[in-house]
Amino acid sequence: MTRPQISSVTRLVALGALASLALSGVASAAAVDPEPITFYGDVAAVLQQECQVCHRPNGANLGGMVAPMALTTYEETRPWARSIARVVASREMPPWDASPEQHGLFANERTLTQEEIDLLVNWAKSGAPAGNPADAPEPLEWPSEDGWLIGEPDLVLQFDEPYFVEDDVEDLYIYFKTTITEEMVPEDRYVKAIEFRPGSSVVHHIIVPGLGGIAPGNDPVIHADGLADVLRAGRDLQWQMHYHKEPGPGTGKWDQSSVALKFYDSEEEVKHKVFNADMGKYDFAVPAGATDYTIQTEWTFPTDSEIVSYLPHMHLRGKAAKYEAYYPDGSHEVLLDVPNYDFNWQTTYLYKERKKVPAGTRVLLTTVFDNSAGNLANPDPTVTVRWGEPTTDEMSYGFMAYINEENEGHVAFTSDEGGIDLTAIVAMADESRDGKMQLDEAPGMVKQYFEMMDENKDGAVDMEEAKAANAFLAQMAEQRERAEATAAGAAGGE
Ligand code: HEC
Image (cartoon, rainbow, N blue to C red; front, side, top):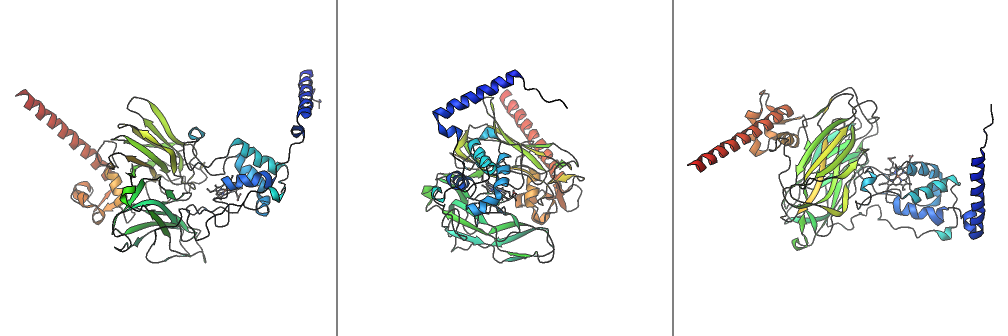
């Protein structure tokens, strides 16, 4: 084996470096013998700022995602030093999936600066020393176990009875009701903040139409001053629960999840109701083994608006999501890019300063799916995956919350052809979760056309039939327009 030769150039450079080091050593002793990075002196402050919201006793339970250990004291943190260095260097922690391009835009961003990453990595490398307890920052105060992150709520709702999730359950989708009495909500209330609390560790997600919900990784909703969701008086809440656990003897658990609400004192304080541009697709099929199956949905703002937040939603094959704006002046902008979507972190991306968009702005949502064996989260790469509530089926959905001056929401669920999207109606109405809408599930208006839509006469409307009905409606609309144009032309010619 030949010994590597040190070239004279290398030697010269090395000498120069030594010389400048010696020089700076004269100028400042600290550069030669830097103060060691210690837990109390440096690390504790970063952990407080960036980690303890989850990593503490009774840490934030973000929809079932509970951090496995506390990082509050030196004793707790020391054994994790190397793991900490690894997960911050790879940017797995803190969890935040948006591309760096959107850095600084969102109020709830969880990212570390390069200096913070270096500090944690170098601390671990140097043996994770404690330092002097006298240098420690004041410990942070966190709400107690039964405290709420949104503060003292005005109303806490639970479903009417606790429910036992049996031992043999792996995935269970089930509905509960909370009766809202006159006494509880005598008139429409304007909701300032919403915090869901899973009643047990087997809760995977909760959806309560009208109030939102939580999936793993969600923060509570706290609206900016003047913005509100509306809780209608006397309308019962429906809880759509998804329980998920390893099945087996002794794994059963009781659950009675709850939601805490904070209201505005009066309607006068409310400047804007918050609406959601439901962007979803329901009639797709992701082929087995596909690595980059792409689905797109559009929404055009009818009036000048301000976007409040986004929440892309897919299941286990979800790989990436992107919201893009096409402005009426022809320009284009990426609003949110999530290049590595992680089902475990259903993050709402909440603007620091709301995004103003003029009327006519078209937003394109692109979701990408990996249904191959290369996707380690994929429960079965050999099957075609369609729309469905279970995590083993898929969703292509993007929440986009917005406000406008008119304080009016707009018909969501528009099909590619521009009319109302009947596939979305079927998806929403399908309470029995068999992928079809039965007659008794159909909303009033749709009941009338049920028989027409049910082409194969099996007593239910499936996605294919709904899709055909979309095309039919669009054709009708076009014919009507043409007839009107002809009529107008004839009238003008007289
Ligand atoms: C939003 C909540 C949240 C924040 C903020 C957060 N973590 Fe985590 N962390 C979790 C959860 C939940 C897990 C376990 C699930 C997982 O690994 O995804 C975890 C896992 C970890 C692990 C891996 C433990 C293991 O079993 O290997 C380390 C190390 C870690 N976090 C360090 C940190 C550090 C350091 C910070 C701050 C710079 C941080 N986390 C911020 C929630 C959080």
